[in-house]
Length: 90
Image (cartoon, rainbow, N blue to C red; front, top):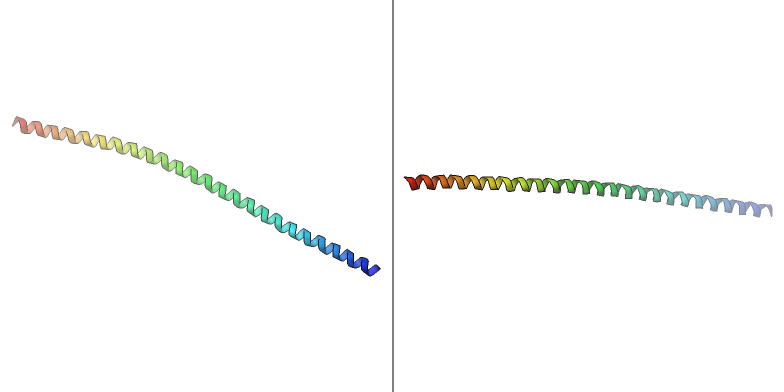
C-alpha cells in the first residue's frame, strides 16, 4: 500500500505541476495579448492625431490657396483693365 500512496502522491504532484505550467502559459499569453492590444490602441490614437493634424493643415492650405487665387485674379483684372484703358485712350 505504501508504494500505491507514493504513486498517487507523485501522480497528484505531477498533475498540479502540469496545471501550474498550463496556467503560467495562459497567463503569459493573456499578458502578451493585453500588451498587444495596448500597443494597437496607442498606434490607433497616434494615427488619429496625425490625421487630424493633416486635415487641419490641408484646410489651412486650401484657404490660403483660395486667397492667393483671388488675389491673382484681382491682379490680372487690374492689369487687363489698365491695358484696355491704355488702348482705348490711344
